[in-house]
Length: 69
Image (cartoon, rainbow, N blue to C red; front, side, top):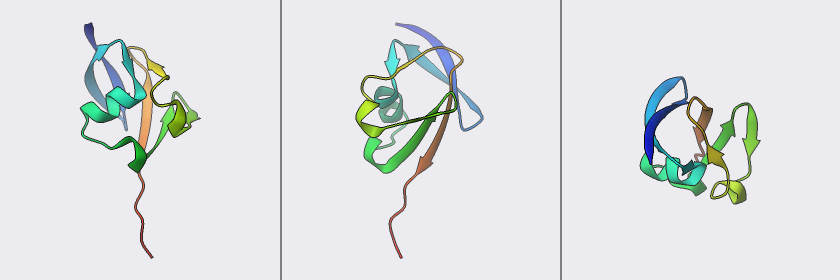
């Protein structure tokens, strides 16, 4: 694993690669089922989080899903 970074919500985050979206979310203490993710401008289905590989310099937009009324 080599450390580098991804840009998550405009913030550079040091990350070890290889890394999937799911692994990244867990490393940030985010539950995969509680967020919506866009990877390099493309929406990622939660069912694809474990298979979607990240690369150094990738951009993520992560939005927490809040339930309520």
